[in-house]
Length: 253
Ligand code: G
Ligand code: G
Ligand code: MN
Ligand code: NA
Image (cartoon, rainbow, N blue to C red; front, side, top):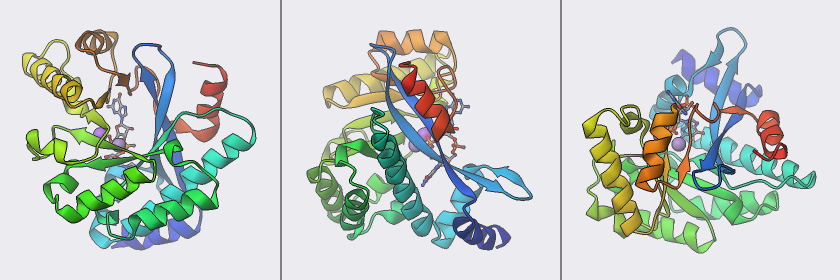
């Protein structure tokens, strides 16, 4: 309860911030995207992990206000970067299943327009729980977002309960292999088998594939051999403040 009311205040007191974690192309070694990740600088507690407050926000419904703020802030930041002629790759924003209602496409379109941001400049990351719930309504909302020019990525892939065949029903252009399967590469046979299966399937479905939580050169080498498209993880960079991400882009990394 305390976190809930403090989180409400945090929104008003500007204690929330977006960090950006680069996604790197395995082919070119260049930054081809970034994921925006929420950070909360609590005046007394210090940095509070989203692993703590996102679940609370989900339970209380506060995730709707939080999610709206994240989209607004990401678009504001993109506009600011564009205004100083920085060329930025698509920025991915995490969407909670609770944000997925019939009004979502309209709300997203309004934010993009307000900041004069093109739809392909913002990607949306969704989780498998949304697919499990996968009604025609959800598919319809996804199709509307795609028709607007946005791309959808499936986050934490492999941790939920959606069947593989299920996937092709949804207009998803990117799969993100969950960090829990990347940890054991290339030494854990099971992780290798799962990663291989996911990449093979994504290729068949013509989806881009991003590996999360890549920390070692050995993991990278294995993922390269599999034909994975992009990497995200501490090997390349932790999530960093906007200014640091802009500096990375300017250095042309
Ligand atoms: O950044 P970190 O790895 O600590 O994030 C922990 C969890 O919080 C991850 O599961 C991540 O997806 C989630 N998270 C971070 N930022 C956001 C956000 O803006 N919206 C939602 N819905 N989840 C987020
Ligand atoms: O659930 P989601 O994939 O949105 O969350 C991403 C989370 O993973 C963030 O909290 C981010 O800080 C964390 N993360 C990103 N890269 C790495 C990594 O290489 N290793 C570990 N342990 N965590 C990572
Ligand atoms: Mn994510
Ligand atoms: Na993830």
